[in-house]
Length: 293
Image 1 (cartoon, rainbow, N blue to C red):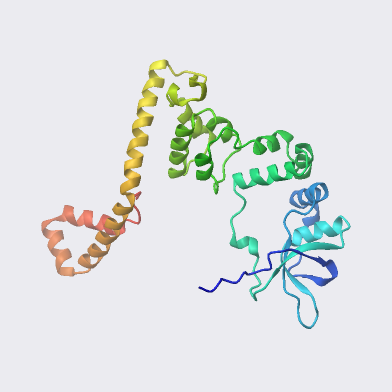
Image 2: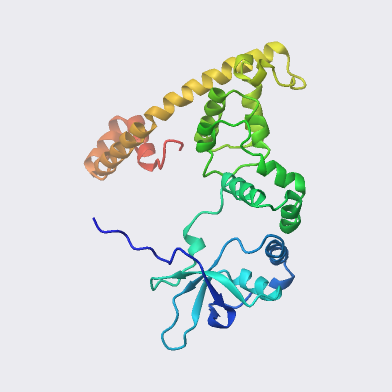
């Protein structure tokens, strides 16, 4: 089996600025923008993290067309650099590589911050480079402390608040996985929802088996009812999740059949005269675009 060729040389190469040709002009007022100043201070404090992406050298001029990293290039020039590490594309497509990948997930940001700290960059220096409070860096640095590996895997490509970790780690591993599965399935990975799940978690599923602080205005009886109802909702949701794929397939097949059936004027006329309620339901199914509508 032949190997798939890479779209760029994996090892960065240092290229002088005079050999890099930008592919677009900088937007008006970029140099005074917050984003530019943040990149400027980040490079000044911790160095270049992400290389520029350039096209292979033109055979006539010897120049490399810049595909990605225009703002970083300007920041490097502003700081007095004369060259930069670059990834060189090996194909002929002039696209921005970062447009073909997702932005960093929260856990990827955590891993990057941990790597920088392990290399000797202090949280204070990182906070100054990114113009954020140092507590924000510390929170992201300690994001996965007390969170089991399976729960972290479920969140690896998700975006969520760093405050979520402090709520999740109050639960035991089994409960962590249950709650994250539910949050991911409902596309509601928020601190508020996680706190509600925490409040509805039985004591034996909490770290130290100590109940969280009582929610103001909620009695012990109401809390117990919330726990029972939340457990019931979780069970029902998992049952629906198991049958959802088959239900969607059945809907698609039924919709396709009914579209053809209602195209027959004789059938439509018969149903309208004899079974108007059935005709109405058929028309609703035809107009349905998902199980939620």
